[in-house]
Length: 431
Ligand code: PMP
Image (cartoon, rainbow, N blue to C red; front, top):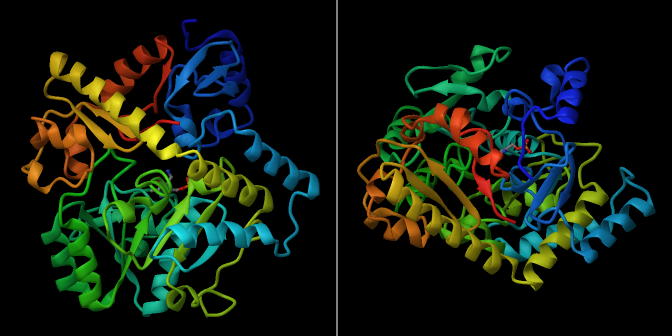
């Protein structure tokens, strides 16, 4: 069936939603597919079906959480149903919180204590507060083009020398404490440390930029962050909200790249499709959170039993059934196929991605990296004769024809029943 945006039922729902929800949606990116966002009726395996009965192959996958697709295996579904039937939540500890924490600790080398929260944003905000409380310093270094959620500390744009809030409503003082540097630019981070080293509580980075095209770390970059943090007594925080339990399988991206951050933030997959976030790290740092320490963190829904059940059984299923081998093979196939198409029709464009993530970037420029310093771990990319075109910084992605994605590519794919994220920046996910 051919999708038609603005189809009757979606159109009517959007019209109605505009009268009760801001912009008709609950997260701005959902308003993007114009003229009318499709409203989903239900999911079905790797597909979603909208209220007008259009069926799409879904590469949004909830923006990452749905490792197993829309049909949950029986064991996962039963665990969720049982948690709901037992009583949805208590505000009192349950054993399932320990089980999920133990699963994460058993698989992620750098983590031996966890705190569960309810979103990626909560996790990154709390991780930064923890780093500040632990080190007694205020400044954080972030990557331009990195995304860590909608918290004041991260809504800052510009350069280390000239920065300002990126959203209305964020006081200028937040920009004083947040230093953006280009991803993959060791000299820029070094310079930030030389200027502000004794004030820097943490460097916060995604292991790969997953919300800004896909930008892979070049060889040695993470190691240089690790060394600088060690030299200056700052913490290295890996934001694995997207990559956690997707890139690098159960060891996460830090296992794939062989780096031990001091703190890690998780979300998405560890909640099995329910709202979740988590901060993990070494006990000595994590104990600085309340109740053992002085850094306040609290939440009515933290460690929600339904979420914990969904996350635990999702991860157990992924382990038992070797889900990562399967989705990563699919990832390789789609990247190879897209690469062939791009080579034939648009050689200046780039196919980026690794494991079960991919993105076509309409780039017309790139920077100087070579295959020697690629740590993407993605065969297509290492073999790619045009690797030098692969974006190395967030700014490289911005040189792409980002508008073209929205104007022509996204709708053309939707017409062919393939659902992609509506902008050039966010990754596609395979289930
Ligand atoms: N960090 C990263 C790397 C993310 O990709 C996201 C969301 N896409 C967040 C943090 C924020 O997570 P949430 O939307 O669950 O608040």
